[in-house]
Amino acid sequence: MASAYRKRRIIIAQIIFAAFAFVIVTNTPYRFNKALPVETNTGTVVNVTSPASTALDTLAIKGRAPKTDYSREQFGSGWATKNGCDMRNIILNRDLTDVQVDESCNVTSGTLNDPYTGKTILFVRGSETSSAIQIDHSVALGDAWQKGAQQLTKERRTELANDPLELLAVDGPANMQKSDGDAATWLPSNKSFRCQYVARQIAVKQKYSLWVTQAEHDAIVTILNTCPEQQLPAA
Image (cartoon, rainbow, N blue to C red; front, side, top):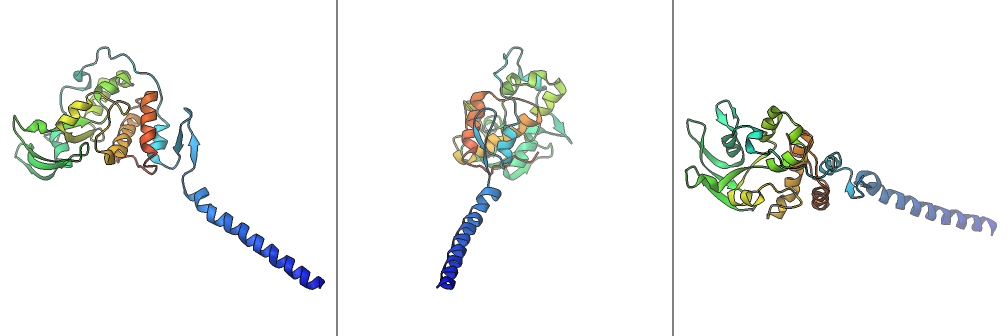
């Protein structure tokens, strides 16, 4: 009888141990392989394994500086050129498909799958048609000026304005609507692109030591919470 009792106790103990081990094993992927939420210095919960969220948490949070003395010329006079091609045409050549280029390095035609609206736009170079597609500064230059670019050298600001990381070929009217808006005041109507959009803004602001406002920061966190594994774009 005593022997049978001991056996039953051993079996019960084995069952309990197996159940306990199962709980540990089944919870291990969540504990160690998935992102752990952490609280930032602003009290906002972000995903620590997401490069975009991690990079966002490195940006300073401040109010807007005055827009005093801002002009487009503070970021250089027009597009810079590389190997005889200006940055507008370089970005058009990068972002459009079925591209045709003339002997002067001008993109004369192509097709854009517009990231801001989701529309397909046919591009034809011309005085009345070229504006259908514009080159947007992901971080608007006016916004950059009020969030740290005033402290950069003119050379560095010119580099910012012509950095391929900062530039995107987009729908002209959408770009005009954005104006100098940040993520708190304007987002692409194409919701499937919003995660990539804010990740690019983070990458640019990190590269050029620009800051974000509290409202901008919180708007970006809201978006990144829908795509916790969003990567920063390649420089």
